[in-house]
Image (cartoon, rainbow, N blue to C red; front, top):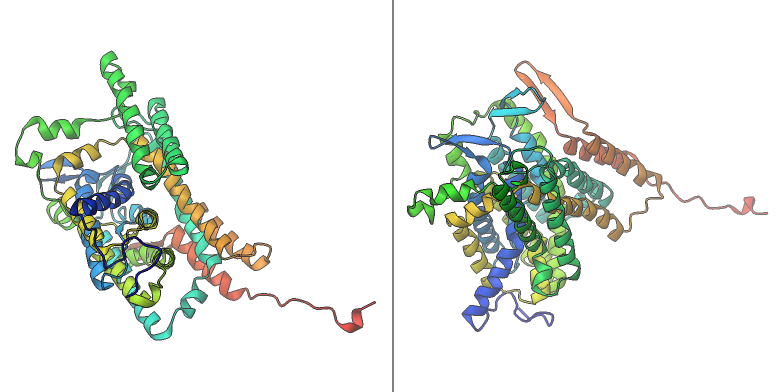
Length: 493
């Protein structure tokens, strides 16, 4: 394999000094860390489960497995792609809305006096089932691409369908970001100005770091933003304790306090509580019904078609950096299988999907280091982090307002990437067909159109994102491009 002139180290090379390799691997871990942990923090943040005889935050339980899943999934991907594609895979934002919806299926809940809903039992088993379905979809598409090429996929999911659907996914999470931004973890208040200021500060610092940062600073803007927001929230919390005023207490430090209140081995090293262990040992998890499996298919499969397009886009970006077409060698069928099986494994371990991370693609692009061996070291570091109790406990204390502030950019970035896709593909929005397709997708998705089908034993629903995609595909297929009218010679004056 001829080395790319665009790189300092190609995929099959390794830094001469081991210390350099470790530093480069740490950069990859830092680039993926915040986005990776944000998924369990937000999706599971409002739920508690009975585990080990205690009522425990579900997000606290799922943080370590999510990091471990990222490392294991990436290692599998690198193996399948013959170590030719230096990608890092971690928890996917595209599936957050689907996960949040799925976990409520068949759940046991009560409506409180203020109108909010409190779940006493949730459906964790539906998540690995849904992710295994995504795995099957990826593998089937890989097989079809191997046999028939990609023309059929481009026809089924052109940019005018995929772009607006991506926008719906990002905008559909906007409410979650704002709800987190306005609440303080330490005092349980639903609207808190200390929390809002901390979150907005994190958002602004993130934007400044990404826009003005140089070298490593530009690669980890979300980490810098969250640390900055956390420090401001810690200052507010300190004032709250000094004045004995709960309103100022933004951060709940109890996870760290509880961890070291009784010093033992688990205070420093502990095994991750994988989702299948929590599901098997907790009485706060409902069993998996046949209708729930049907709903899992309706919830997750349509989203998987969108993430296939994202997968292709990320690999095109990496191909440009490597100056080699990864869709040819190792081939799109291999990269899809690697990504799909990694998602299936991740679903079993933590319930989240895995996806290629643009942040790590950017690290390769900026550093010009494409060494797969460096990526393998980063995978081992991510797995090791899942066993370090102090790191996990500290992560657990990150207040919802800080993740909410950063999420305003993250979710907006998802939505904006849909717009960017249509611009890059030069979609002409002056054409009525394109206007109608995009309009139907946006209104159905953001408006929350759901298809529900009642059965003898309950009902099955298709989520708004899935409905939006289905309607978009149908509109795109039934509306054909108009032929340009030309003036005949008989009409000339």
